[in-house]
Image (cartoon, rainbow, N blue to C red; front, side):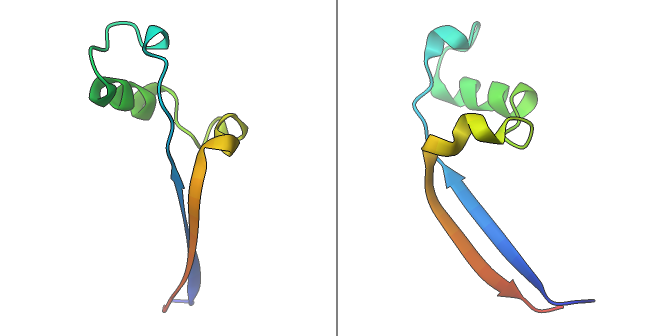
Length: 60
């Protein structure tokens, strides 16, 4: 297996709870985002929410 580079991007944002109908708290809103608003589908929508980027070498 080849060596790889792993990139870990951390996003943090405060949800506007009115955009999360039926979610009583931030934990439920996070589950809804994970299920329906995958950051990989809308990466540009989260650009301003990036708080860190980590690069590491992963041996094969």
